Image (tube, rainbow, N blue to C red; front, side):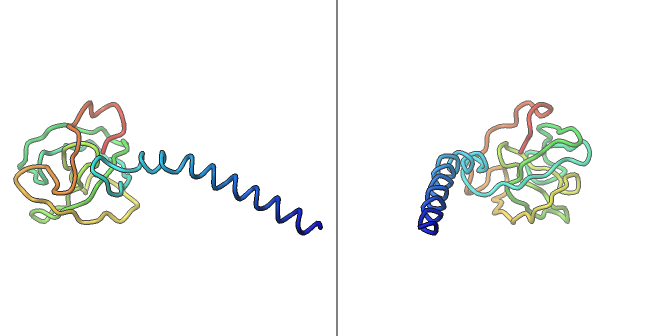
Length: 134
């Protein structure tokens, strides 16, 4: 009888945990995805970082991120020997040398000519000094 009571309590506790995760799960998952879907990788700026329209130092600068700010990264490309990170929630690219990450950042399919990725839409760069970026 004691074993049956313990089993019932464990089942009720497990059911409550599943219900709690089900209630929180979709909201938490939605917050971790950039517009257009896919996984977001967190990093932070080591120094002032220019946000470029395209993954190139010759590309137009469309913003600047202060040091020690959180950025959210979609993916990376190689261009002229440099690695560039695509910001996940804003149009723009940052030089990977200026950003520290702990995650492995996947390669992205860069179509060239503009900052758009073939599989995502991003919001324009807003106030860069305020909220966490990426």
